Amino acid sequence: MMKFAVLHLGALLLSSSAICCVEGRKPTFTLSPRANPIESSLRKELEHGVKTSNNKKVLLGLRGGAGPLDAEGFLKVFSSAGLLQGALMTAGPKVSNDLYGIDSDSFLDEFVTKQCGTGIAAFSLTLYLMLFKNASLKDAMVPNVLIWTFTNLQSLLSGDLVEAGFKTPGFVFCLGACALMAYLLSTEHAEMALKVWSILWLPAGLQMILSPEGAAKAWGHTGTMSRSNNMMLRLFGSYLLSMSGMIGGQVFYDMEPLKAMGFGNLFFGAWHALGLLNGDCEAIGCNMFGMNVWLLVHMAGVVTTLF
Image (tube, rainbow, N blue to C red; front, side):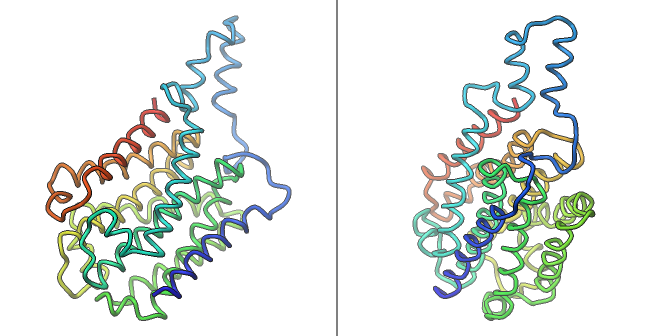
């Protein structure tokens, strides 16, 4: 278990460093040259003779950040914290579960937690590269899909899938899809690939949230799912929806990256709220303080970036 955990962390570090080594990259979030909505709005306002200083709140609202917190600064802290949280869940799933008071008596508990941790780390790494390295969306997504390529390959080769009670076809599909996506992101078809990617995982994410046991069966699980397993599957579903929302907001609706990140963050916040409202957290003995803190963090991110 520790051997694969070390490999997981190695993949995270290698993926994050690889994207920083590409030369000649334009410091922009966008996939293709488009008019910056902030600059366009400012230009229109100036043409009408309105002073720039009077438009500060309008411009902040366009990019996110009209609220009391600085949107970009907040998301930088959030992405860094998410990387640490995801790394902990991936490298030490039992430690993470014990920290939050979640039952972790079976291999399935640890396997689902590792998958969720990988998702949180991959999502946070994408945000981190866009915020700290000025990576474009397509470049920031390359480490994300490489992490999942490695994760699915490791799960198949190590026998973790079988031990956790899952069958292999669904994960073989994921392995192939992630490897293909990594290739397409380096071609002229990158934008279309991102559009397909944002749609592809929506049904799976929705099913995991609405019917985690049904989703587990759809992915070949043959055993019994505990309430904590269901809760963690919902977390994985929220990750899929967060990625779809963050990508789809930019490639379909030309959202500013900070707003798209906030929109994606909404689904993680919804998972925490659902766990508190439906009694899952209390039933499995989850650390209520930790859940409430993360809920406040996610909601602060949503308010700061979207409003």
